Figure 1 (cartoon, rainbow, N blue to C red):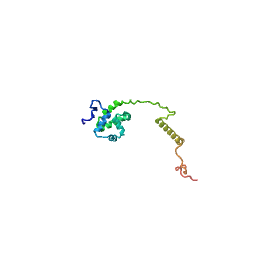
Figure 2: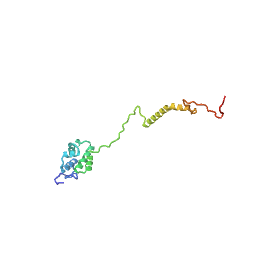
Figure 3: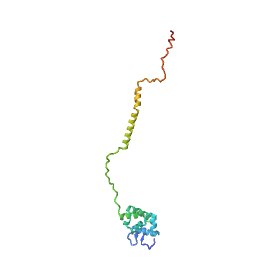
Figure 4: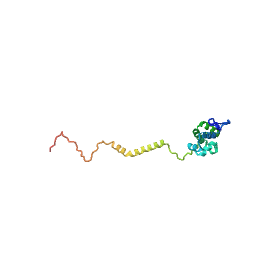
Amino acid sequence: MSAGQDNDVGSGRALSGEPASIGRRLASAREARNLTIAQVADNLHLDARIVEALERDDQAALPSPIFVKGYLRGYAGMVGLPADELVSEYTALAGEPPPLTVVRIDQKVPFFQLPSTRMLRNIILLLLAAIMVWLSYPFVEQLIDRRGETGEELLPGRLELPPVDTEAGPETD
């Protein structure tokens, strides 16, 4: 770095020994790379007002800290500053948001609750079996009625004659 600069960009300390703010460090690093605010904003896909607010350390103009941390990481990476160091400094300044807590919402019990899918499947299978029995009843009844019969059915159009006795011979009158 040149000897005429106000702070040492790498260390984050001003020449007077006090720590430089995050915004001042970002602005110095941007100027050292000959970048404009518009170029930084275009590269980071941000509005130029956000980049200006980052460099001014204007917390009121910045969005939620979770977004600012991402912006700082991108900006620091672009100008060659240690991103983790800047983010940890910002977290210390902004304060860590409270941890998320799980809140249980009491659910209303429905007036009529549908049965489970397993029970619904079993009911459908039982109904199908009952329908199959009901449809097969006439056929089963016919089988039961035929059980006592000999099984030989006379075919229509055929006449059965008594067997012929061939041993007695022809009778003559």
